Image (cartoon, rainbow, N blue to C red; front, top):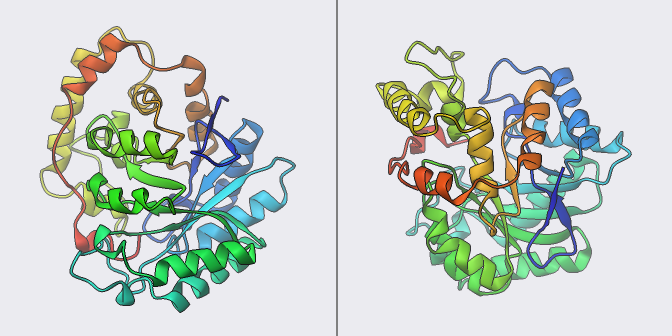
Length: 329
């Protein structure tokens, strides 16, 4: 495993982090708690020292599993979690009052609930699970994070940026109150590199690159015949003709990458790690096999300039997320 700085914090975190949405079990099917715990523990053995979870993942179940795994580990692990919007609406709307989403008392209560789920006294990185810069100048969120920091319940604060809207937290970053951001960044959605990443580098703000494999689309394993478990998040994400679209785009990628060593998933993770602004990449990992394959990626190093130039041409502007998919994620 290789490590990078998390912005201006004292932490050096693993280039591969453990994305723990899937182990919550509510919107992802087929997982078992014993498998999840084995995957978490194996990741720690392989040098992973950052886990990203959220209070909304399985209504706290993901946090509980993470806390259980960390408690039984001999390795130091940094936990990042998130405060869900009080109105349970993803993504945030600029015309919605922050009083409906992140009032002071709710921020405090949610953080304390996460601490109970995790069985910990401090959250290393607490994140707002949605954001719009329309809220940046309001006072309650600022007062809440200051109080939580002073009480020792939270070490650092961050923002999980809305899907495909990397510019929606630029003003919050400029306040200097945000230590890290979490944002979609992958071969298909490269938009974070335009404005967000340069600002993060300037302000020394850490970056957690999420959805590096496009919810499985960039693994190359999804076909037009793929069937997801009823009720699973991806059943809706890849609905209609979206699987066909993904298959066509991945086929074009594979043609252009002919001869490049590594699987499609490994290349996709290396793409994310090739940008210096990225602190860690957090693929979803529910099984030991996924952990082991993902943790091999840092040893391959960043992609060369020629390959990155090829991948730049495969940016794909589209949004498969819809409000009805993100009510509890």
